[in-house]
Amino acid sequence: MSEYNKPLPVIQPHSKAFWDGTKAGKLLVQQCQDCMAYMSYPRQYCTECWSDNMGWKESSGKATVFSFTVTYEGVEPMFQDDLPIILAWVDLPEGIRMTTSFVDCDPADVEIGMEVEVVCKAVTDEVSIPYFTPVKKV
Amino acid sequence: MSKGLAIIGIAEVPTKRDPERTRWDILLDVCMGAVRDAGIDKNEINAVISPNPMAQPEMQNDMSLGKIPEVLGLKGCRDICITNAGGASNTNCLRLAQELIDSGQANFVLIPHTTVQSDIPPADLINFFATAPLDKQWEYPFGVTFNGSMGLITHRYMYETGATKEQMASITVALRAWAAMDPMSIFYGKPITLDDVLNSREISSPLRAKECNLLADGGGAMVVTSHEIAKKMGSGRHAYKLGHGTRFMSATPFVREDLFHRDSYRASSQDALKQAGMNIEDMDLRQIYGAYPYTQCSALEGYGSVKENEGAIAWAEGRCGPGGDLPCTTMGDATGRGHTGSGVSMAFYIDTVRQIRGEAGDRQIENCNNIIITTSGGSVMNTCTTVFGSEPR
Image 1 (spheres, each protein chain N blue to C red):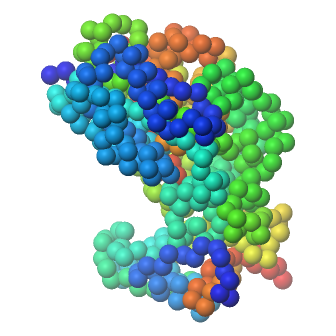
Image 2: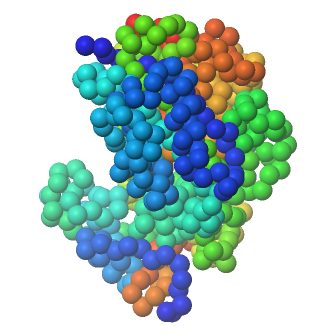
Image 3: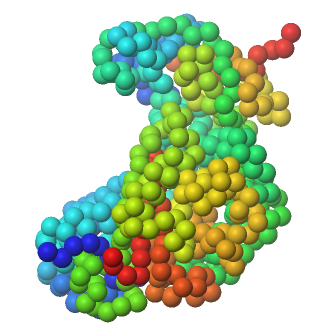
């Protein structure tokens, strides 16, 4: 696992809980405990009321595809073996959008509006990255 | 007091990829060229305000720390400054220059730009454009590139508006048609067809290679002064700034509500037009710096030149390219010119002056007196919209 050579997220004190969550296989969303606004990526202070009283809620791990793009070339060398990369913006039930990429998925099967679910993959001993994958049809 | 801002001198070097032509070669050429074009003495320049040369730290230090007036012997230079707003840096240079002029601190300000990207390894440039304007925690670890980010917006734009890939490709064909007639473009003499675009390699869907930017070297400079001084210096050669409006959206695209910047284009253009005392219908040319084709559509929609969702139709019908009734972006945008970092907006302003002077050659728009121009920085974090005219008001 120590051979992971791709960029790791630059984790900040106020976002550490999110990354602790993905390590445990959970997708956490940050919520202001004063005005109850959800943060679209974790912040030190609430973007609505500037409170520092920030808390966390476990999201369902399900999301809807808002947009996606399949990258075939033009990446740095460390991403070369991952091509094609399916990058996406997905919307969580809390009204938060996040950037992610899809795993275990054929680019031809992706559509805007489709349901996806989180897959937290450990890339180092310290970091698990929240990728998504299509919800398997029963 | 002598107020307002007019661009009275311009100079440019051809856009190309040539590491033998150094950053200082370009810089000295365009600085001396613009001062001579303005018809003033070098010692009349009171300030040098430069756009940050992105991804070129040594040149950034030279420009930030005063080398330009020293090397050029600008004995009347009282002040220097550098601005960084990515692609909108030149807009900030113009705004700061106007402040110096309006407050009586300067009569003439030199705004020079230089960029050489051909000596930077491709992987470093991909890294720069993937990390500087995007997020290192919430985007970069997933393999986001700048093309990828713009691919995400473009896909959603096509989904919501129903624009087809052929309509979107027609934008690049038109931009390249303008560029093919421009000796300053890296694609001078090289028009392309719809099939060329549609058959080019897919980079980040739906964007194909011809719809993405070729990173290139280039440079340009402007000399600006007040309306009053410009007017005394003669007529027919100066671009008078008549109004300006800016709107900021967000640094990071995925948190942006105004995803296609329509509201931003609308509000900033309304501010600029109101100050100018004009309507969008009074504009003879629309210069849209968005660097990716969808912006050529959403800006027209925001300006109110076409109905919402119908920007791509206007381009596909040939209205915005050469010979069209709604000419746009005669400079070719970054896609048609070659992307010179913070220099694209410089090339846009210089082209605006050329059009007002009637010196745009085969690209010349007939009776081109009033021009609306929008620049943007970062990942289209903002829209900075200015109205220029051939006469002060």
